Length: 131
Image 1 (tube, rainbow, N blue to C red):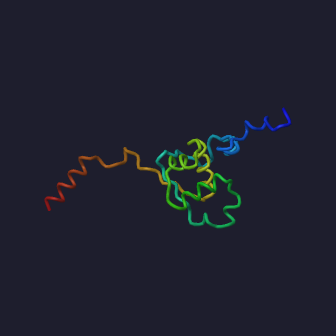
Image 2 (cartoon, rainbow, N blue to C red):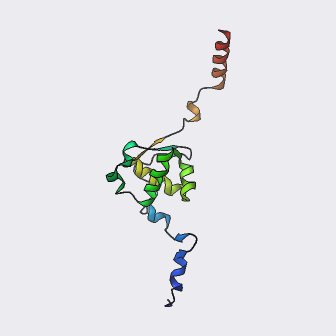
């Protein structure tokens, strides 16, 4: 390695900043204990007590970013990944950590099998019109 700093240049990009590998953010985990099935459209909402100063002391910068984004408005998993420019898998692990720490909760979409049949809705509308 030369003394002019060229050996370190591949670890730093002026536009991107220092390189941090995704597995470093998740401490090598690909799932978290509280990570159930987090769909891309699952909505993440910050819990009211997430603003407590003591609660935020143990969070990594990425966890804090997620809590901050969701504090302004509920965000989907896909929106968080896009906003943070992180892989979906990493965001799912980080959200799972926050769920386990009760900093956020996740609202999952209704599965299509549980939605009412369109014909039933049409019958209800027809019945209401007949009144």
